[in-house]
Amino acid sequence: MGHGFQFIWSSSPNIQNYMAPVSISISWVLVMEFTFHFLDLHKISNRLYKSIRVLQILSISLLPILFYSVLLVNRIQTSLGLLNALLILVAAILSIKNGNKAARLFLIGWSMLIVGVLSLTLKSMGVLPTNDFTSYSMQIGSMFELVFLSLALAEKYRFIQEENTKIQSELLKNQIKYSETLADKVKERTIELHNSLSSVTQANEQLNEYAKNLKILNATKDKFFDIIAHDLRNPFIGIIGLLDSLLEQEQKSQTNSTERNIARLKMAKNSSKVTYNLLENLLQWAKSQKGEINFQPQNLSFYRLINKTISLAKANALKKNITLEECQTQDEIVFADEALVDTVLRNLISNSIKFTFPNGKINICCSKSVDFLSITIKDNGIGISEDNINKLFRIESKFTQLGTEDEKGTGLGLILCKEFVEMHGGKIWVQSEIGYGSEFTFTLPLGKDFPN
Image (cartoon, rainbow, N blue to C red):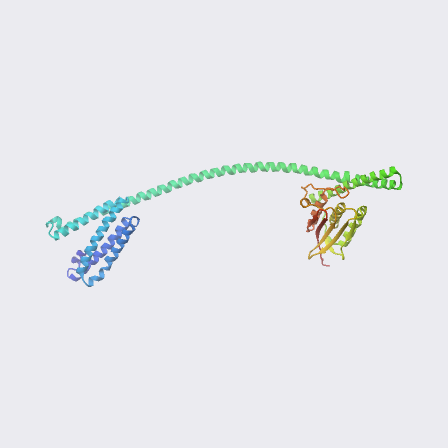
């Protein structure tokens, strides 16, 4: 390339002397860059890649030396040219071993150029005779180099096309495979959804059938409680009244047979009262389950409520000589439904009397917090074990026990107490120990101030 400048600047020999080494340095840098990318040296040898980069830097670094000595630059460039050629041959051989088919044509092309350069050099040294071949061996070598490099580029292009075709084919196969897999999954999912839909349909049919049966059962249950309310409750009132009348008549007579009759009448009366209380609790519970409780809270005097209940319970307490004591020192106003609170108090005090020994004592105390009034009914009766405490207030737990004089109970009263207390937004709990009695506590909201 540099020799061509003799025709451009024929009248300027100094420029010719400088341009030849400049063009050679630039040519080697470009040739090594082409070699690096064409042979994919970064995939073959990192050490070879670094060596080529060093030679490129050295080729450019020689240019400032031209201002000192052109001859020195030419000699150094000759040595670097030999090193570059050697590295190119080594790189081509390694690339061939690595499976690069185009590197074979690349190697042949560069070998042709090297042979041409060697022939020209040996002719200059007098080793080879001067003839047309030796005189133009470098040009001939360059021509063959260009031919084989063109073939190498064509081979490289063909290889790249084949790789692209393979990649596209592989992508297409993967896409088809993915589509088939997706189609299979969609099909499986469709079958699953169909089966699920069938199951849901069957479940809905069963639920509809269950709902129909449940509706019939609820209607039957309601009818049953109506029968209890009308056909059993009223006759029991009559029976208890009749027993009271007979008992009063027998007590006026003082014979031995009369005493036996009195004992029997007392037993009949107690049994009737237990059954009547059971019916009352059953009816109350049934109403609460059906949502038929008419909940009407209002401001009430708790002193009046508790005294009313105590007055009604004193007769039963006196039979066992049990003392009912009220600890309340001042009246408190609660916001509650009078009928429901009366049921709670009646059940709790009745239970305390039932499970307290004769000559026992029952305390009814109140304590006030910010928003609630706590009512505690404490007795010194037989007490309740911890295991049995966990069974209280639960309809599914069948827990009953006899009183201190074999009084019977059903456990339904405490369930009603819990439901009625919770309707007021309160809570109910119990503390007890066997042999030391029980302490039932529940809370009611304090009275509210309404604007005039």
